[in-house]
Length: 287
Image (tube, rainbow, N blue to C red; front, side):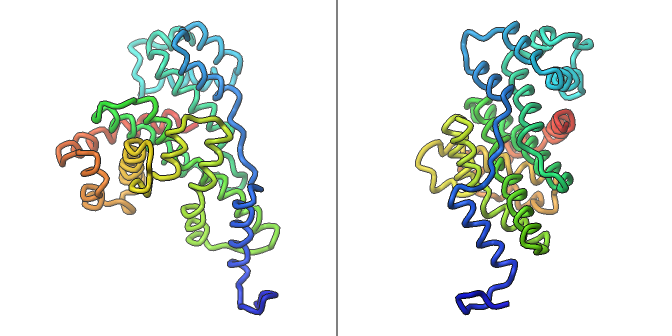
């Protein structure tokens, strides 16, 4: 099929051009940060926040409160006795962990939705959860901020569902069928650009935006390099856990990011020993 310019352009190439134009012109429909998530994020960084404030905030959203209670009672957090109220949950798990659970539960309901592509979105969501949970483990090992690492890991691919939705909507409009491999290539290629715009729009901490932009190219990061390295390592560990055929054991162990983080083979063993725990957390948060 010939383009107006005279160069041969396939419908799929035209579609990709339209996608890139939308991204560059800022015409991509971005998800809103759910109200509860933004309030929880503000409360988590407030030194005067207490258990009563957090539980009353979660109570304002009945669906969120139900999710948080279910997650708090799941095997991932192993309460010694059933958690019977939100204040009890805060007492058992602490403000930081409960804020994290509430933020994550709220985010899933708002940002990770692409009608007609539920399986793909579920796969992206599980990968994000595993990356966030592994990022905490790497941060503990490196003795750096665990809450910040979790946010970087959880949100480093926040642009992916948006690229998926934009590309598939364009494909429907233009009546073009896209092969899965091509669609995945676009999602991987353009998500960081979209993700950094989302980070800015949502007012996320600066290190999260930088990790979104540079986690795969950490050598180009001029700030927050540690967070970029942590996020890259967490992403590789999550891939190894959820789709080991894409990141076999040998490829994981020889990835240069671990040497950059000064992590040795026994450190990688220790991180891999957490696989069952990470999977339990992913299953608990996989709403």
